[in-house]
Each structure stands twice: as structure tokens, then as C-alpha cells.
View 1 (cartoon, rainbow, N blue to C red):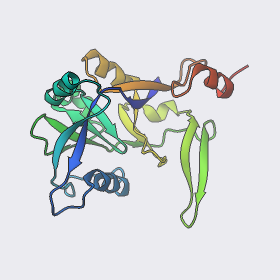
View 2: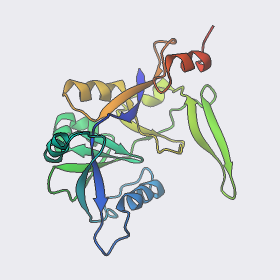
View 3: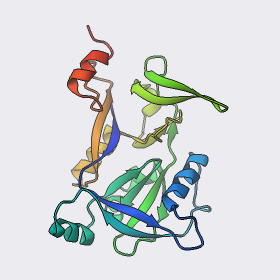
View 4: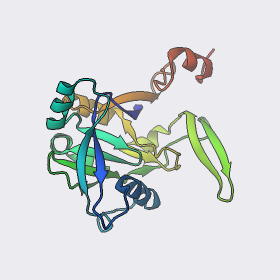
Length: 223
């Protein structure tokens, strides 16, 4: 079994939240806070109404900007604790999506997108065999900040597609198994670079968050 981190591909069209006057200026910050405070819980009855427009980043020419303004540049994109997903991806991935979370509406008139709130929380990180940075933050106490090396419990990942570790890591980690990656790529969907972070069958795997040289210095099981 393999586990991947979802890294945003380059030249994606990025959705920007624009709130009505009755709401705070930053809807994106509101949604992040809402999902953080209700981690693993349904948000269907709490989800706010808002409007989205499209902003374009990492594009160099006027022609590129015009093309991306008319065309969905991604099928899935991550914004911290939640995902944006196109209706095309929802239709193609089907049960792999509904098994791991809930779909929430986005007020986005140009393109058909929804938000995916991942509800599958798994106690799957083997903390004794992982290398995880721990931070003390007064007055809140300590918390797991960032996994440097992941090790997972294979039995705890049975049936997983997209999931969040039980530990609340700082960047709101959403992880994918090879079952999800294979289905995503087979459909020709775009939006993620899947970075391998663990392989249960290959002790010499390369954690793709690091350069090969850096990983050679820190990897487990090195001789």
C-alpha cells in the first residue's frame, strides 16, 4: 500500500472567495476555521452561503489568462483543510468521494464546483516509528506539528481513499491512498501532484516531499 500527500499542480486556476457584505471579508479564513473547529463532523447545517469568482495565478501571457478564465484548470484543488472538486471528478470518482466525506455547495456560477469536507479520520500513523516534530505552544500545551517521516499502520488504512490522520497536524493534512490516486489518474483528472510519502512494500521508497539527496540523509532503514 502507498500513501500520498496532495500537492497542488502548477498553473491551476485558483478559486477566490468573495463574501457578501453581511459576512466578514475573508470567507476562505472563515471556512478554514469552520472545518478546523468541526474536524470530522458534518458541516451541512453550518455551511454558509457565499459567492466565488475565479482568480488566475502563475500565468505569464494575456492569452493564457483569457484561456484559463474560460476553462476549469483543475478538477480538484486543496485549500488547507478542505478540497474543491469539479462535478466531472465527482461523477467519475463516485463512491471513492462519497465514502470519505461530504459534498457542500459553492456559489460559483461560471464552473460547476463543490467543496469536499473529508470526514474519514483514521488513527493510522504509527507514531513510534514515525518522526514527528512536537511543539509546545503556551498556553495551549503541546501538539504534533509536522511529520518528517511517516510510518502508517496498514490495517488502519483498509478501505481508505482520502483521509485525515487522527493527529491534527499544523497544515490540516489530507492524504490519499494508491486506490484514490490510481482512479484519479485513470480518469485523466488534473489538479494534484501526488507526492509519495510511504510505501509498505518497498523499504527503499523515496519520500517525494524531499530531494533524493535530502531523503538519503534522513530516511529510515538506511544501511
